[in-house]
Image (tube, rainbow, N blue to C red; front, side):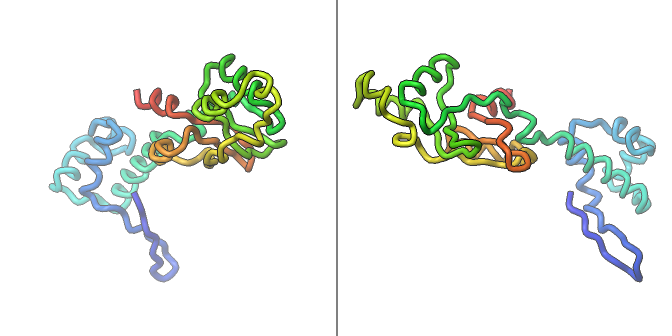
Length: 198
């Protein structure tokens, strides 16, 4: 709920959202009128009257209602850092195709980010490995370095990004890396978002 601040002779007033947005916001958060009343310190009948348009609350009461709804809305929207897997399986550019195959089998995963020092420089995926396995034997796989066959680096997003904005991104990318203060702290795959939706 966006609020605008305006100044009238050095006094700041917030222009609050429309009163008819209270009920949809409350329902979206799964709150009863009674629960919202208890959180805002007003009576249930006052919430009922405001939502039905039969009562015009004071500025202070309306502000309090919107503050509570805004605070709960912020808490309820999960962030990327909340659902990412903190245990990241990593490969290095100097690792071989053979190393990547072994690691994918060992951890039963379908994509692994490739690092050069602390920087993510690429991605190895199951699909990519299958293509290279067809064209090489085991001896060659031990010689081929990942720097030669890796796919482009996956997207990196900040840990505070809302999860709902990541779903479209996962349609185009096998995984998303999560960073905090420029350091990679986790990874999100399509299976992570499916678990969250369940």
